[in-house]
Length: 246
Image 1 (spheres, helix red, strand yellow):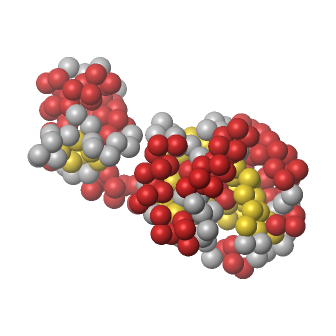
Image 2 (cartoon, rainbow, N blue to C red; image 1 turned 120 degrees about the horizontal axis):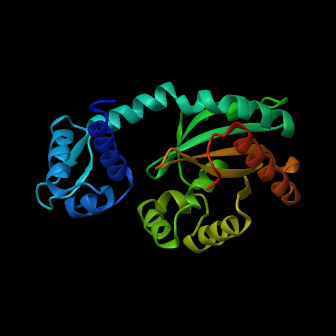
């Protein structure tokens, strides 16, 4: 449609800003990755900055997402279009497994629990997690999200939250050992504090990541069951065409 090309280009810049970089993104990098000429990219970024969807660091000249973009993300969490799409899939998984199915989305160093589809044996404490946030790695589906990062990034993440991890008896070598096992398997299988389960991360759009987790009391989650449940999640993701497993 007439005028739509400019909107598409501006949204493309927003997607590039949404890819996490601690130091922000330089204009020359945005020009190279977007295919826009420098003048066009600069003008579009200036508009995004003026509207609050991008922020320009005056000292470094780099760009990152702005407060308005953050506000849209928070509104999306509250209305949760991902939940609406995933509920039928989660119902199918709950029927196949006879267990509880969680949906979480990654928000920085944390996971946000969007939905719980209960199995035939409701557990009150599980429902308390819905709407809450947890540090990546301290929940079964959130562990699957953490396993998407490389070792260097995980090391920086651990350093930022070392006190919380160590309070759970998790050292960096132990965390990395579990993560490497999850990468080798293609899914995370975790047990502790009387519960166990399997988590599988999947793509949301072009830059987002979410995860499904099937969770149950530990006695119903032997190691031998992990591959079966991970395969069920992969099959349902493909069947509902929601997002490829990471």
